[in-house]
Image (cartoon, rainbow, N blue to C red):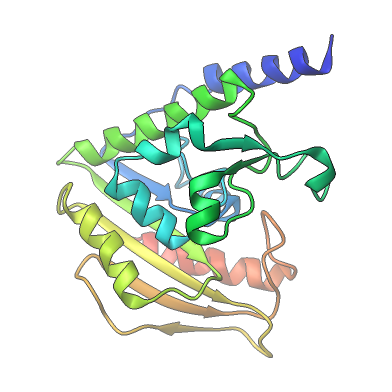
Length: 233
């Protein structure tokens, strides 16, 4: 089987195989990359795929996606396949989003997939957006959103994200985890309260995220304990 055909088949299987849909209680990753979704999945909290589970984001980009109902994210005219010569490895850093590259300096949004070239990858992204919209549209749902980032983020920006979520219903809340790696020890520092539906925590750690985990298992355990505690009703 040719490589292109094999990749398309794998993508189609991924789209068809994820038939899970939002319910009355949902835990949703807002990025800033796949580490957040992986933690939620490992703890049994993530039960369906959303658009931010497998892309690179920044808090400002998340705010923009919620504000325009994902119109720019889904606009394929912004997509550009990254030439292999410009990637760290041939199979990663596959596609940029020109609008977010210009606005936030994001060199790559789609790391392992390329919706500019693959209809199945674009369908998978669209399905994730549809599920997130469905969760937000259900006024009876309790939606717990999680955003974990090492980017410095103004408090006003986190509040804006919370306001956009609250517009869809009182059951939407955000836990914002600001990762600060490279510390001599690990500790959790709750930040000053902002919106009523926001919990913001500074997470000081020794190691940094290396994709789906931290460099130290102890830091993984700290994050898992934190998420478990924050997820409790």
